[in-house]
Structure formats: structure tokens, C-alpha cells
Amino acid sequence: MAEKLVYLEGVSTLKLDRERCIGCGLCAVVCPHAVFLVEAGKAEITALDRCMECGACARNCPVTALQVKAGVGCASAIIHSWLTGEEPSCDCGGSSC
Image 1 (cartoon, one colour):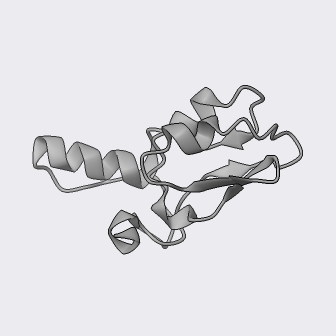
Image 2 (tube, rainbow, N blue to C red):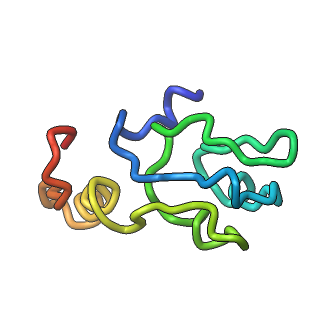
């Protein structure tokens, strides 16, 4: 099942500031793709390539320990493509697209 949750390899913009993390676990609760694990009072990104950059983790983090460019780039392009039937097109401009 875990392999089915992988989005795109090496493109996620998700970043965690472990020094700021208070280990509340909200990121793990709201993440639809099980990207996080909370152990010993701190969150860890254990499956970065599962992140689809929805931004739920960053919006719910009470200490802004998480950053992600939600709603832009590849995830947005693919969701837009699903909804409209158009070809996916993102603005990341990198070689990973």
C-alpha cells in the first residue's frame, strides 16, 4: 500500500524545522499520505515522496515548523488536469517535471 501513496520522487517542497517542532502530532493527523512520524517529542518527515503539497500540515502546525508551497507546482497541475481533462502544466521549471 505504501508504494501507492508515492506522488513524484524528489519534487516536494516540504521542509520541517525540527528545532521549532513541539511534537504535537497535528501534522501526522492531518496528512492524507502519512508523510510524518512523531517520535520522542518531535515530528519527522519519513516519506517525503508521498507529499502532494496540499499544505494541510503547514496550515495546522501551531509553531510554523513546516513549510510547503501548497497549491502550486506539480500537485496543483495534476489536480487541475484531473478536474479539467487538460494536459498537466506546472510552473516549477525544473528538470523533475
